[in-house]
Amino acid sequence: MKRILFLLLAVIAVLCFSRPAVATLIDNGSFAYDDGANHTGFVNLIYDEDLDITWVGHGNFADETGFDNGGVMLWNDAVSWASGLTIGGLGGWRLPTTTFGITIGANINEGEMAHLFNDELGGTYTQNISTSGDPDLSLFPGLINHAYFTGIENGGGAYTFSFGANASGGKHDLVTKNSGWYALAVHDGEISAVPEPTTVALLGIGLVGLAGAEVRRRRKKRAVGKS
Image (cartoon, rainbow, N blue to C red; front, top):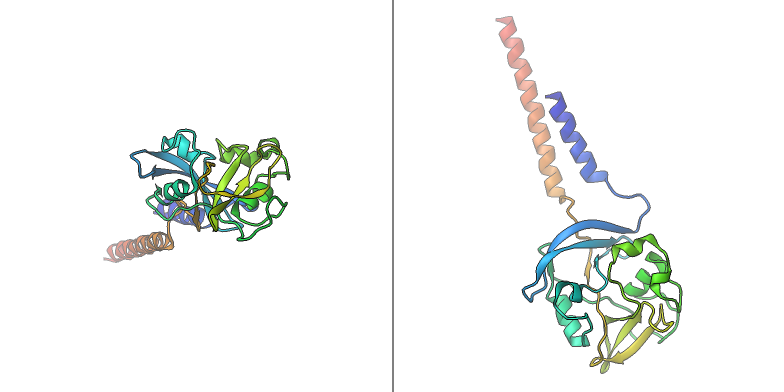
């Protein structure tokens, strides 16, 4: 019984406290996906602690799933693709954001993709992201040295952020929605396989129940010994 109690305590401790102390990009493992176009499978989800968002862990996921051959889409199609994703049983996926009216082409670290490029993947302004040598690049296989749509419109156009085509790494641009660019998908908050607090609470209840059973067993044993 003592061994069972110890194992339960160990499980609760691991579930509650297992988190890298420094890392800001966390690979939360593989989750089942459905892209809304009869393509299913599994993809890793990457949590950004700084911005409290979860990235799809692939740099050209629309092409990877077969949703779009090559992954280059018009803006409206990219928006529909992201919103049509179901990953880990959750919808609500979207294109990343940036600041409306941002200065085009400037080295401004604003928006979710700029943060990913500069702070998380070690990108350098005007350089291809593939040259950064940051180990976290491995979290985003298929990431392309090119421009990706954001979800922010401006009149008849939409903003893009470049990961490095033609020495444009780290730059924003405003393009027509009818031009074709790549797309990343992101979700607000953390999506992980770590049990919710209710699950941990149920484990605690089970622990209390086992402890009570042990107390009753010992009392019964003492009573039998006295008789």
